[in-house]
Structure formats: C-alpha cells, structure tokens
Image (tube, rainbow, N blue to C red; front, side, top):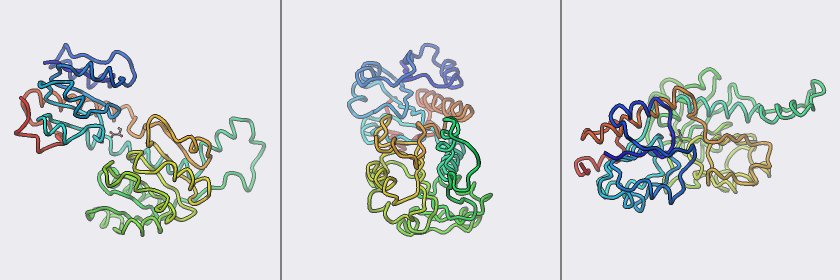
Amino acid sequence: MRIYVTRRIPDAGLDLLRQSYPNFSMNPEDRVLTRAELLENVRGLDGLLSLLTDKLDGEAMDAAGPNLKVIANHAVGFDNVDLRAATARGILVTNTPGVLTDATADHAWALLFAVARRIPESENFLRAGKFTGWGPLMFLGGDITGRTLGIIGAGRIGHSVALKSKGFLMRVLYSDEVVNSTLESELDARKVSLDELLRESDFISVHVPLLPSTRHFINRDTLRLMKRTAYLINTSRGPVIDEGALAEALRDGVIAGAALDVFENEPAVHPELLKLSNVVLTPHTASATFDTRNKMATMAAANLIAALAGQRPPNLVNVEAWGKHRT
Ligand code: DGY
C-alpha cells in the first residue's frame, strides 16, 4: 500500500500509521505543498492523509490514479475536498469530528474576551511603554456578563460555545435549521431567524460549514442588521464572511468589533482588516492545543487504516460512497 501524508502531523498519528504501514511517505518540509508537488506526490497512492490546506478536487484524484481508496482529512471541515468527485470515483473521505469541539469553542471564547476587553490592543499599548498611569477613559470595552449571545449554527461547536456562556449568565439565541433541545432546556436558549439573531445579539459567534449557501452570508446587508455595539466572532470558515464588507463595517462603526480565526483567502488577510484596532486576528489556531491535535492526528490515521483494511472508517463523510468504493 502506498500512503502519503501531506505535512507533518503530531507523532501520535504518525506512530499509529507506522504500526500498520512502516513505509508511508510524508512531505519532509513543514509547509503546505504547492499544487505541482501535491499532484506529483499523490501519484499511485492507495491512501492520502491530507490537511485542510490541500485542495483535493477531481484533478488531484485523477492524478492519484485508480488505486486511491481513501482521503483521510486531518480536520473536521472538509470543504477542501470535492466530495462529489470523490464519491463518483469510489474514494472514501473521512474527517475528525468531536475531538476539537471544546478547543475550538474555548478559542471562540478567548476571541470574544480579547475583542470585547481589547486585550491585544491594550497589551501592545503597555509593551510600547505608553502606560503612564490608570485612566478613567482608557480602553473602554463591551460588557459580557448578562448580555445576549447569538450562535449561528448550533451543531457540535456552536452548542459547546453556547453551553460555556452559563457562567456569564448570558441570554442565548441561536439560528439553525433544526431545534437544539439541549440548549433550549439547559440554557433557555431560543431558536430565532438569522435576522432576529443579528438584530438582538451583543456577541455573535459563527459555526456554519462552508457551503454554496453560506458563502458570504455575512455581508454588507447582514452586518447592517447588527447592533452598533455588537461583536462578531468567526472560528468556522473564512469565506462565510465578506471580508471587504466586514472591514468597511468595522471602519465605519457599523459594529463594535470582530475577532477572526479564519479568513476568506487564507493565509492572506484582507489588508484593511490589518489596519484596524477593533479586530482581533489569530492564524486559524482554534483547534491548536496539544491534546486536540494529537487526537485529530490519531483519528485521521485510524480512519485511513480502517479504510485500507476494508472496514468502514469510523468518520466517513461521503457515506454514499460506502459499498461503491474502491477496494
Ligand atoms: C478543522 O478541523 O476544520 C479546523 O478548521 C482546524 O482544526
């Protein structure tokens, strides 16, 4: 079996992979492969352990050839993989759900606090030697306790973000296609329309997958529905927000602030965002804790091993490919 890992992942995953496939290959450099390198390195593979930064479309699958049986993505998100193309070719695609829920939700909270209480901005001020004494008007920010939290997408991660608001006695609104009865019973959370959520919330945390229907769903118009004192937090996927429109809204005081872990054209960040002090930016690190990344690596490796052993991988995404898959 020929197996390739597109970039070094934590040892926990590599060790597991090595037990079944001691001769697997891996990108020797700690960087994203270029397109040409990706197309070259997938050739003749049976199994590919990929990252969210690898674009795996029909062309890449065809470059791999007819033996490719599984793409084990080291991420819960899988918008980098063309599922339809994979299913059409009988290639199984897997992801790493669950293990990064809390880490990502914790990071959403870290961002929420950072932007509302202006932590990076005030720390930079202090480090620059500008702190000359306490001032009654210095770095005023937004209150958190008792305010309204709006969760867009109350799946695993949105649910976890909402539950963690308990300690801050927040009123919780959520928008989703389905009712989340746990949030309703535990937090008295209310399912509302997107418009109502945007109008009513003081903090809005986005947790939707990237789909044609969610691309730019936060745009000039939806931003204008938000309170001028509200904050927007995004740990899902960058393209769900129109970054140009967000930069404009932040600059013009349409909303109070934003905190982003994901970007429309990663790793690029909209240049106007970089100029603004009311936005906190982290480099797609919401799941970056030691334990979480070990679990993601182990899970991705286990999915790949199961698929190549002819078993249904535990975290199969394109379930419709099962039964029609390559063996
Ligand atoms: C994912 O897994 O999809 C996150 O974006 C990175 O951990």
